Image 1: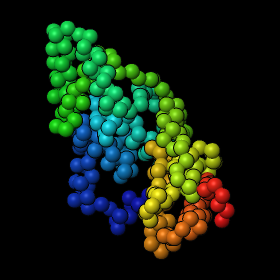
Image 2 (image 1 turned 120 degrees about the vertical axis):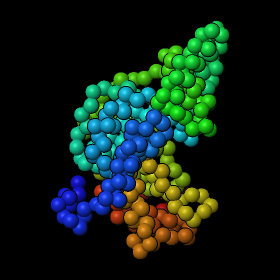
Image 3 (image 1 turned 60 degrees about the vertical axis):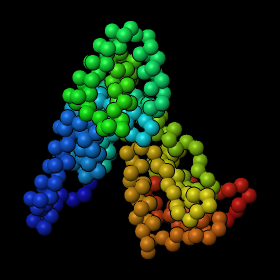
Image 4 (image 1 turned 90 degrees about the horizontal axis):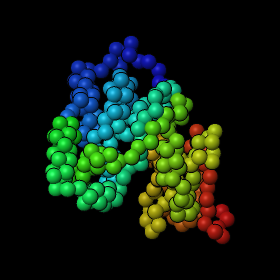
Length: 282
């Protein structure tokens, strides 16, 4: 953790800054699930340890959220924020078992919804939609673009068609077993070679992500998992690629390899492995 600067007047936040920060935490009590998720993200990004108590309350918030082509729940966002905060502070995360599930592709969820609705009578359909709409109005308030999807998901919740696992996060890693599996899957496949695999220094077989050049273009790419430690790896890479830190070559494969070796040398807080194309020895 960084040193405590709260007693130094030079680091005392202004009233305007305090007002801004309070505004972010106020979002955690919004009747909108989307706004609560924004507040959760802000708490994690800003290192708001004063939000931990409220984040723990949100572990019971099953309000649906749509992100890209996946649908998830507010409580899973809250769990991720708690994990990021505790990992950054190097503090154990002590929680009772929490409800957890994989994010659900929206297309698959809609298919499950159609199947479930088709099995109900008209009266039953009307009743379950009424119950779902009441919850949506009270504590979800979905954005217009996602209204139909969140309604379908809430109907499945009302019908007990959304399954969960109850798992206790490991106090030290902060993760549940399901998350360990999901994060490993996110970075299981090697990226285009040459590429650099980034892993834990103490567990070099546990991949955090990959650094590589996109085929046919100069920009560098990196794919890191959603593991709490992956943010540190991503931040380290950003610092390394800051102009003046590392010469980022735009030449051929040999130049790319040398640049990746330079990045690996500077990422000394992580284990790295350079993977070369077949037949290339540089």
